[in-house]
Amino acid sequence: MSLFDLTGRWAIVTGANTGIGQAIAIGLADAGADIVGVGRSAMTETEEKVVSGGRRFLSTTVDLSLAGKAGDVIGEALASGATPDILVNNAGIIRRADALDFTEEDWDAVLDTNLKATFFLCQAFAKAAISAGRPAKIINIASLLSFQGGIRVPSYTAAKSGLAGLTKLMANEWAAKGINVNAIAPGYVETNNTTALRADAERSADILKRIPAGRWARADDMVGAAVFLAASASDYVHGTILPVDGGWLAR
Ligand code: NAP
Image (tube, rainbow, N blue to C red):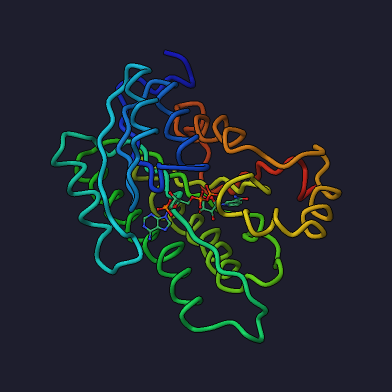
């Protein structure tokens, strides 16, 4: 079997309707996986692409910022016949304001979605994988702000830095139980998440100048790393935060 073949595996991908989550869902399907899309918006386009490539697509509609939903997501996926093979925690939001003006609402919204929901999804998924006796892969979508401070995004930086730590903690606890927990840290990607940043001509030009690859990332630049971390090729890779950033962190 190819080191990168995902035939026969199910991948649960949160935020699969657009951006990085959509690209990863389609990319994992192209590598052979069937997909459970999880999100708060319709995932019609993703479903069409996955199904037209010959894979199955199930969807679960949920607002992940609400407490207690993570267990339901995994329970629903299992009840629909999916197995706990791969979990991609991609859903996330960002709120921008100076640290001096940052509100508690913007703090809670980002932490609830980007960190709390992710942890409890990992927990529910890991319990299911361990009780089924199945090896499994968790891929968290981190950020450059898992390594750097950034500006005007305090709750996002806290969440993504926390996610890097949690990825390592979960790897430490679950590696011997057959679960690989890793993360991808995308650089600057052209998605809804960065619309405001790209609309700011000065910030956008400053960012571009610093990217050794000389361009922003496209969502599908994340697919290779996701397939690697989902496949047997990465069986001995645990607790890593893999930057896919056009060289940004090397500068
Ligand atoms: P995006 O296009 O805004 O996609 C975010 C996804 O998360 C959407 O599907 C969104 O659904 C979903 N989502 C947000 N809140 C949710 C909630 N409460 N419940 C369920 N789903 C929710 O942004 P993206 O750039 O692809 O972001 C994907 C991930 O990559 C995020 O974790 C982000 O932090 C990370 N990231 C992005 C960049 C970048 O430069 N773009 C860089 C580093 C890391 P809706 O469409 O309904 O809002």
